[in-house]
Length: 426
Image (spheres, helix red, strand yellow):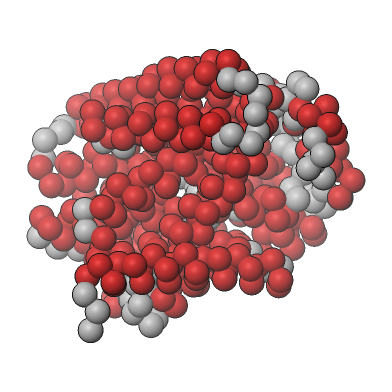
């Protein structure tokens, strides 16, 4: 039997290889990469061969997952574009309506159908509130989704994901310590989100100024090193002061760097995107490896029914309310109502919260984690396979020519000249 250091080395080797193999399989077969990444984690983890145990990393798991998640969210913020009043209004209305509709509906479904206690049902509803940009973005790219749907879906995930994570943490603390009443809970939520957004804004502006002043030398790699240094310091600093505030900080920093760094952001975009894709390829198998069928089977049909209610009833109702009166076609509203997979942040929050509940001896921790991962499995599996055919059937996919024209339009000022002048540009 191998000793601990060797097991940890093997854990990383197997995890990275399984993620890369899933991405290769997706490229060769055209199957959704997120589905294959999730399946690879189930295969190597507790539900399959038992080769990877994420909690062998101990307390380092939370730090590693947090840094990788911050990288993914920074990348999402860097690319986030909400052109036009319709897109911005749609994102704002979706966020508000889902907070008012999906949050209480998830609470009721988790308690009545899946059998979670009221406190744990509230934590579950907050955890699964946000759709996953780590899943939505690859699906949008693979589908070649016509605007404005791609921007709306990405914007929804990037705004709601941090809100759901912070709210879930506060509800968890309420379960473990009973330190909040509901007024304190709302105030603490606003404080942590506001602190994260403020620090992210300052860090993003600082990074944008530094990137502007650096000499243009694509070979030095200094831009990437500086970006990662500022981002990781920002994230860890936020987490030390106010836990979970690092997530909104990462999104806000990415948004401001993408907006104010001009061509420097364009030069960074490809490198950050590749690193974010690597983070996704590591995180999905690593966190899915912790799923055990023993955590899922006790949920039975009640757990399945809970997830189906969220997918087939709660989401469509919320989308119809949020998009009422907006200039969106029936097909666009239908796709918005269907496409809501949960992703990396959801899985990470569930895994780390379950560990805290286990340590505190709270009954039902396994059921909470199992229901969250059942939600991920069903939304990613069902929607991952059906989203592209549905978009094609509704006529919402771009042709190759339209896709290239859209890419050129999104380049910052000077970005098109950069792409033409560079000998390595395609």
